[in-house]
Each structure stands twice: as structure tokens, then as C-alpha cells.
Image 1 (cartoon, rainbow, N blue to C red):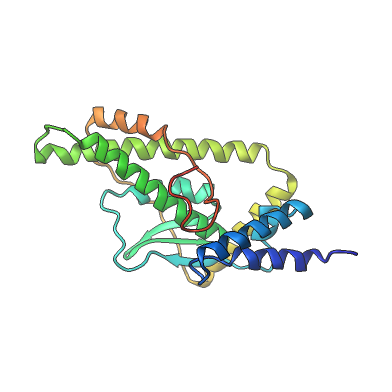
Image 2 (image 1 turned 45 degrees about the vertical axis):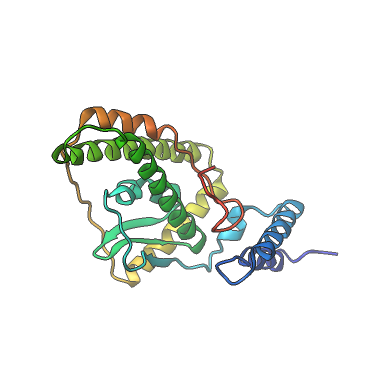
Length: 233
């Protein structure tokens, strides 16, 4: 019997949408994911097949009201994460906004949240036992966060470059389609971006400590739904 590939992809997508966030219990979500993965392996369906069709349009996601980024960690990582996840990310008056295809926006949101939590945890360890007075503590924080974010950005940029070198013609076509979908969405919403540069006074020793901490970060998609990945794999 001939398998209709479009129907197959829709079935797998439907299974992967059965998440806790969408109202399923955790056992139901895990069972649906297991079945989806089995079908992907059996019929050789790739992540790209699931994420993209030429008819698919980009979406715009804004951070929820009340979201905080007190040390500018997410913003400091946003440019590199946008390239890694094939999205556009920028800072608006109410927080970060992400434009891209739905699966890419979900991944970028998760990655930013997870990396920000990683940097904050490493920052807390760095600050423990610090005898610096309150006036100097801000420069220590700026230095550590700046160094850690720089190292993570550099590593993400290197991974993007490595991926571009090994990309097939089909992979390059997918990137072009994604870029066109994002451009269409941003044009429709009259969004025009401009670069903003800022400099902070930092503590050099803390900056170096942040660079070292950034080496301990790693990157990957959550394996079993939105609540299952407690650390970066």
C-alpha cells in the first residue's frame, strides 16, 4: 500500500502537538511523542519535513507581560540564538519579540529561557563569598554576564558556520524559504530593525570567569516536550 506522505506528516505533527501545555496528561504526551518518533524513523521523516512547508507562514511571539531580564542576559544572547534557530529576535518596549516559523519560535523561546537560567545560576556561584562592596558588585555582575554571554554567542556562531558548510542544497532551500516567510511577516507588520550598541563598565577578572563558565553551556532541543528538559542536553 502506498503511503500518502503529506497525510503521514500531518499525523506526526498532530501527535507531537499532544503536549501537557495543550491539555494532555504527561503519560499521554509521552506516549504520543514515542509514537511520533517511531513513525519518523520508520518512514524517514526529518525534523525539516515536519517544521516547514512552502505554504507555512511565520508568526510573531512577544514575551508575556511582566517578563524580566534584569542583567540583559536574553538580549545579550538574542542575536546568536536568532541565527541558531532561524528566527529574528529584537527588543521591544515590553520585552523580546521573536519572528519565525512556529517550531523555530518555540525552540528559540526555550533556548533563551534555558540559557538565561544557566547564566544566572553560574553568576550566583561566582558571587558567593564575594567581599566586594555593593558599589563594585554591579561591575562584577556586568563582567561575568558579559563574558559568559560572549562565549555562548561565539560557540553558537561557530555551530551555525559549521552547519552552513555541511548544508545540502535542500537545507539551503529550507533556510531561504524560512527567511522569505519571516520577511513577509515583518513587512506585513511594518517592523524595521536597527542595530543598537551599548557598553558597560565591567570587572575584567569576572569577565574572564564568565568566559570559562560559557564553555560549560551546551545546546539542543528539549527531548520530551516543554516541561521535560531540566537542563541543556
